[in-house]
Length: 230
Image (tube, rainbow, N blue to C red; front, side, top):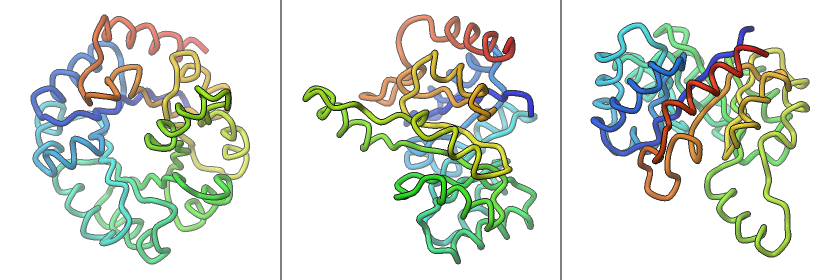
């Protein structure tokens, strides 16, 4: 699978999400993600706005579904999402419902192993239950808590720590998420994870949930170029 670059629109307003998405598309990004903050703030309206502005672009709705799986997936599919996200730690019945909704509604299902005691086992579970992709995820709060530990001399966790193990555990495409640096994001395809996500802190200010300052478009363009040259 050729590398795919996705931007995580972890923003809280539709106008800013559309502006950032347009910038990302100019820079060469392939997929747009309606991040969890955007979905919490704007819900289906945010996904519909992205679909109207970018009618041919894949849109991931980062629902982090834990219950009510069929309805959540179906609603996002009708709003224009092409991919939805369910958590490995949801009840198996919920994962099955999201997968069924994906089949019925023509959307792909991404299973997220955030919080699994064994991340590779969580990934295998998601594949076995019919998910189309695995998101190998070190969460925002876990990273923030680890920043305190880092100041005490303890190492912060990274999705790259166990990425190779997760990739070996499954046969479906894997995406690594969670505070990646530019060089780490670019390295993901070399680990066998072709779905590269660009979010906080690269494109989004993780404190304010606003678009990062500086030449974000230029940085995105350079990242996309380097990923595709590998």
